[in-house]
Length: 211
Image (cartoon, rainbow, N blue to C red; front, side, top):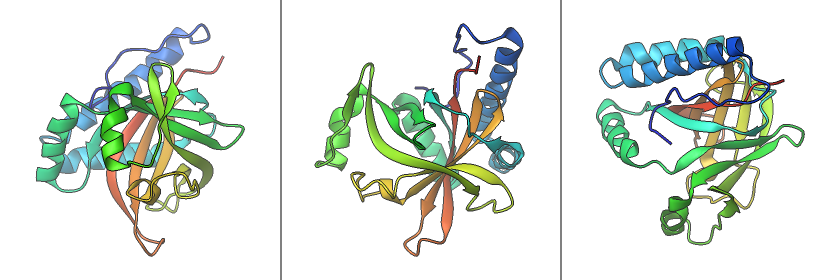
């Protein structure tokens, strides 16, 4: 996975050219905002915030998706440094969703197996073909933690007891669909009081289009 979204289309037999074009246009827009964050951080984050608030909860997302890190949002110098690192290697490849079960997991590059053992020695990743599967989550629709006037698809790691307590169970992802097949997400940090959240990063997911 690249550090920012690329424009490689996912083709399926049910995709129409118009739907694919809309998805790819949105994907490129998200990618451009991610690149702009390196030179005009304030404007790019404002654009991502507007795009997120204009989306709708990703309720129909199902199956595997392609993922991309758009930008971190912590501090300018840190964001620039971590962007350089993740451009060279980022182990996250996307997410898988089971819409009927309200659950899913993350897809990692197979090269992430040993680094993950260093961070979480007791946690076991699972084989998922070309990828590894890890960090299961539950999903639900509710108001956003930082956007309480908007509904989002919450991707919650805390309810899954098998997830590592270090970092993972403190993450709350929120996801909206910008256009069918193109999704923008917020990675949030849940503080120890369980009430406050801080925005860590934006990410994007690209899914196949419904038939």
